[in-house]
Length: 106
Image 1 (cartoon, rainbow, N blue to C red):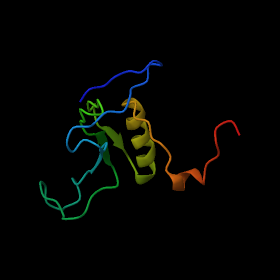
Image 2 (tube, rainbow, N blue to C red):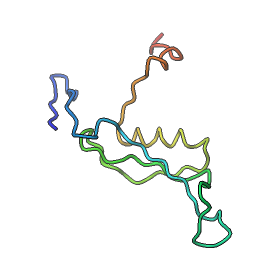
Image 3 (cartoon, rainbow, N blue to C red):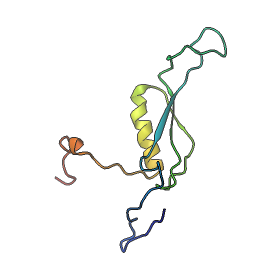
C-alpha cells in the first residue's frame, strides 16, 4: 500500500490490501440485565443501547478510537455520524441518494 499526494494535497487512489476495500463500522448491543439469572443471556435478545466503533483498516489509514455509546435506536445514526467524523471518513452519496438531495449552493 503506497499513498501518493498529488499537487493540491489530496491523497490519490491506492490499491488496497487484501480484504481492506470496505470500511467497517461495528455496532454492539448490550445484553446484560435481561436474563433473570446473573451472568446469563437470553439468545437473540439485547437492549436498544450499546456502543459503536470503527474497525482498523491499514489501507484506509484508520486506527480505531474508543467506542462511542448510544442510548436508543434514535441516537444510533447520530453516534455513527460522530464516529465517521472523528476518523475523518468521507461518505459519497449514491445515485439513489442523489435524487433526495440538491447540489450545494442551489
